[in-house]
Image (cartoon, rainbow, N blue to C red; front, top):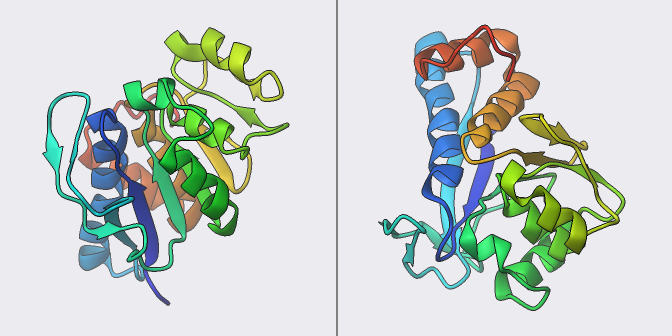
Length: 201
């Protein structure tokens, strides 16, 4: 069994925790795999469209592993949010890439306002979704054909998953881990992250 390939799309002005949170959460499964030997876990990589470094909204410079033309086959795509996502248009390069490529990736998961990018790409048409609570009114005004669900950590529409604000990307990653490896592995990962286990992710 091959590892599950997780690609993380990077772009300037993305929120750092939106992608670092899921990245570390998935990486902790590999640490457990080495200890408990339950089978191949996740292979996580980052990429930007051109393969060049990006600067996050918090001023952190990240050098991606690949350009979009170099990425290996991807089982799960993580799309972060941030200021760039909120001001995106249908014609932005990463929106065009999502429109062209997103439908061919088994699972596309947007963190926070990354849902705006999926909606611009047409992936959330007549779907349910969530986003950061501060951006819900803007999202509804721009994308009335998407049903926004409030007061949830994430919304799972099968091959499309959207999460609430920023740290909710970790909850979404735990949900994906539970789907793939079961409750025990997800709970152990949450413990390693020192999350409140009285709350469901």
